[in-house]
Length: 80
Image (tube, rainbow, N blue to C red; front, side):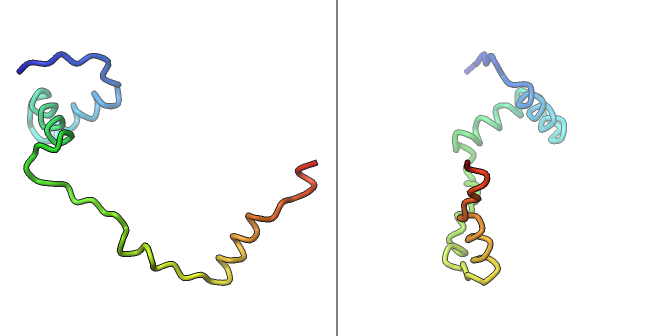
């Protein structure tokens, strides 16, 4: 299958070209690899971190509570 893709941002073009150079591949191969990865078709799933292991690890401390309280205080002189 052949595609024509227009409007590729400069930053994306540069990243794809760098990826191709680093892997010793053609630009076309690098683009096909990136499309396959983005479409979830690479066969190996990327590990994603959901932070569930630290979600209940919050421990409030006096310094943290004081900093949060300072953020809630309204400076009346600034709001006149």
